[in-house]
Image (cartoon, rainbow, N blue to C red; front, side, top):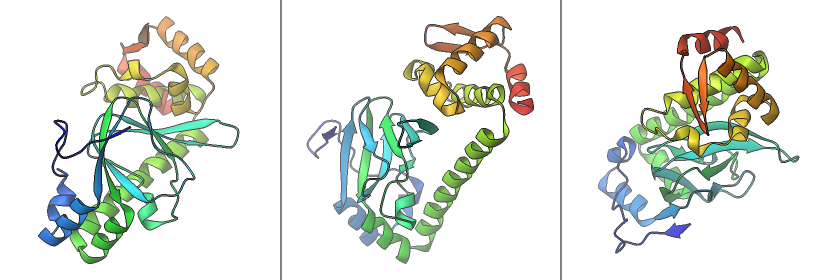
Length: 231
């Protein structure tokens, strides 16, 4: 992790996100004075579940894996966060601890904004508050969807969901599967690594996909979508 200063070539002077464009000059200055720009190297932690939340993060570039974990060091992957998304947004509206962990899958840059600053602006700017709440609700919808998949689908369906979700990211991130281990894929599906490897090989035998080193190439998306629905 590296703090990026104003005289660094990598420095980005402002937060280019629609919600921040709704701020008044005074509010924008408040955010500007309480933010820090940070470079996270691949594998760096952005947040740790259960630790005190003093700031939220806005991803400028790179990819970040969001996940929850239990006391037995088992984890469940929730989402891959992309540029333009927030990390730790729930701490603005609820408890003062991060509800999940986040780790950088690639070198990533983010703005760290003091949580109290976001709280202040939310209270006094209705349109900004609306957009922040909208993003918060979208995150919750994603969580409920993930919970539903784990509770009501069998392993085949859960793995199919995971592969379709990750494959959708390939357009903008062609190397996405190379960034994820088989355990990562299993943790998105809520199954063991051994089960994930076995199911992937079965799907390859059925010519639904090809396994090429770490990459996964989907040959028959319609069949995979059918497995997702019936699984």
